[in-house]
Amino acid sequence: MKLVYVCCSLLITVWQEVEASGSGPSGVLDRVYGSSSCPQVRLKPAGQCEDEDECPYQIHMPPLTIQLPKQFRLLEKTMKELQSLKETVNRLKSSCLECSLQQIDLNLQKDSGDPPTNSAEQSRGDTSKRVYQNGNDSDNSIVQHMQVKMNRMSNSLKNARVQINSLQGRLEELNLLNLQNVEAIVDRKVENITGIVNKISSTCTSNCPGQQQLQHLSNISPRDCSDISMLGQRSNGVYQVTPDPRNGSFAVYCEMEAFGGGWTVLQRRINGSVNFNRTWADYKKGFGDLKGEFWLGNDKIHLLSKTKDVILRIELEDFEGTRGYAKYEQFYVSNEYLRYRLSVSGYSGTAGNALQFSKHFNHDHKFFTTPDKDNDMYPSGNCGMYYGSGWWFDACMSANLNGKYYKAKYKGKRDGIYWGTWHNLTSEYYLTNYRQTFKNVKMMIRPKNYAP
Image 1 (cartoon, rainbow, N blue to C red):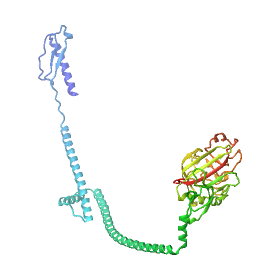
Image 2: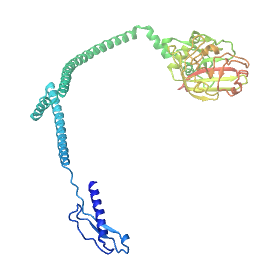
Image 3: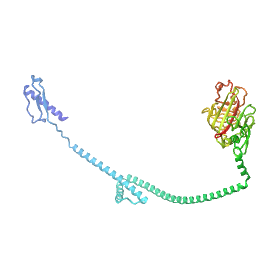
């Protein structure tokens, strides 16, 4: 700024001298000021001028050179020294890190019993010790603490390795011993069991009348009404069947004349003479008159549906004379331990599939419920008690063939014989409407492979 101020002052002085010399508008100032601080300054007119006061001039100045004080040189030297020092520190840091890693590797190799890879690595490990010794106390303490931890870890690893090797050896010995012992024991047991079975078989063949009786029964006793039909009996009536010789024989009613014959009847409703509001024990054993109304019994139904693949046929007739049927290609009732669970599927017929009415009313895979034993899906009460019968209730029902027998239409609670897909049930939705009643109902089964 001082230099610009000096040059500006000189320009003003030159301008004053030009005015004093009286140069015309066409004159040129070629004077060079040797004693001035700006010796190379030149002034020229910009062109032809008619009026001296309005003639423009151009100023020509030489390149400027500024001389800085000597402190700037010292500053540059200092910056270079700082950069050199920074690079030296970085090299020391990288060297220390490398040496520390080498020392850790050497310690691990010593603890694990492996020799160092080469002498150069070992010498670098020694250098790391010297570097840390030349460092400050905090660095030395950190390194020592790390070395202590690494030593502890290496000792733990060595101990674990020794224990694993020991356990592996013992396990191999035990495996060999156990395999040999188990094989020998199994061989001896199999030989003993085989000998005992052969002995019992030979003894029972000649001396066991019970075994002979079972074989005789299984050979000549009909298992159900289809076997009786195959023997030539084609009349409806009561017959003895033996589904399983271990459970003895029992009487059943056989439908031999309708629908190809060979049907074993499980349930029948014809006049309301038998009360179906019964206990679990009654439904288990069976009740009623085989020549009239009856429930065959859950134990017997289980045996009949267990020995063969059977189909179920349900016949219904209302008091208006309308008839319909529902046939299911698969039917099975579990034992009492499984609460006589129903399995039914494969519907066909004219009465509608009321046993599998909807997602919320589905009797398939449901347990049997009676007024004194609640196994239904209704959480707030007993469907069997409310409707007065035993059945495979859901929550509660879309079908109930064991309901009360009404001889005329009734109102109120739907506790009568019910089939939820019957043709005219849409008109009895409200409690004040009359309920549908059925005159005849029959449930019966027959093997799938039966050929009349």
